[in-house]
Length: 126
Image (cartoon, rainbow, N blue to C red; front, side):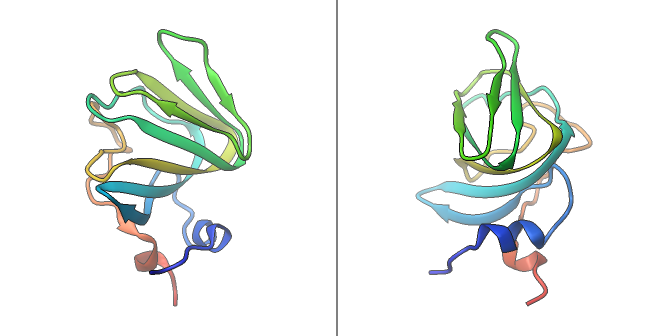
């Protein structure tokens, strides 16, 4: 077992919208990401996605429902198939929880698409 200090983890990388794998359990991945500005509109056909704001503010735009605005310490689960676009106008640190094989841009190929998520310990200068 390895504990993760969120402050140290977020300080270990500065890329925006480039999640790092913090842990895995039961086929699920715990990912951390620095967010700034707009992400891409996308959906995950077969996967729910949990967003937890560690610091800052994150707005989740939804095509079919009102936007959800998350402050530090708040979370929301975006159900599978729901098109959404995360936006962090002033930057945010977010924790994501989703099936391990879930691609960050879901059904969309974009500049921000990551196919190989780095583990936190691969980015640290230990």
